[in-house]
Amino acid sequence: MSNPYLLLWLEAPLQSWGFDSKFGRRETLKFPTRSGVVGLVCSALGAGGEQRELLAEFSSLRQTVISFVRSRQTENGKQKLDREPLLRDFQMVGSGYDDRDPWMSLMIPKTISGGRSVGGGTKMTYRFYLQDTFFAVIFESLPQQSLEIAEALRNPVWDLYLGRKNCVPTDFIYRGTFETQEEAEKSAYDIATEKNLLEDFRVLDGVDDIDECDEVMTLNDIPVQFGMDKRYRDRRVGVRYAG
Image (cartoon, rainbow, N blue to C red; front, side, top):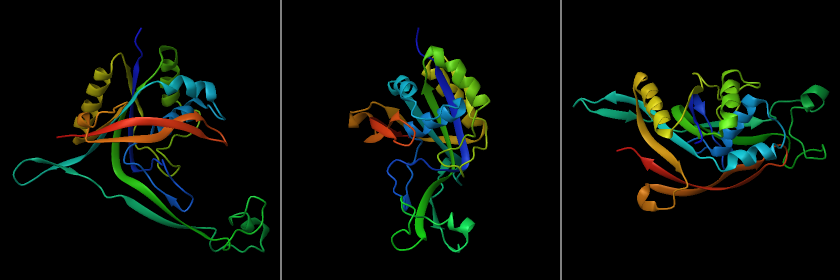
């Protein structure tokens, strides 16, 4: 029996998929990471903590991402992709609080021992977001998992976000379970057509030949363990641009 494929539609004014972020600078990839999508599924299931066994079951399953963007007609009648620029958000964490007030003091960053942090309590951070983006994620699942995951995505235990908690989805995420990847792709294109979207690029798992794709990269985004001590292993992906 072949594995089923779940179609997830990720749409929001803001999305952010971190892969190599530090406290002061929170970057985003231009597409959803494997760890981000698996984390979304775990949130829907209410699966907290390390979840090593569940993540081991997910680890060998493939994920294909298709990025869509808005399109418009040019003067000569051709369709043109309207890509939004990356949004950079500047934040000051811990600024404006009175450390003499017990409640306000809780809002000021401190060292692990609870003392004053180096350079004072205010920390400057830069956070980056994708704007007005649309992704179809074709998520391979095991037969015994697909029904539970589908039901959880329809009625999630915990709130679902597209990368960060301020990235709230603006359309239904779960869009069906299919016997083949081709059927899931066709349904994704149907959704995109209804929304007047065009394919921008797609991200494929396990691609090593640069001739097959426009970019090949290694991402450390297959989750091995969640919880306080998060651990990941590498995944090789290829990016293929439309047209």
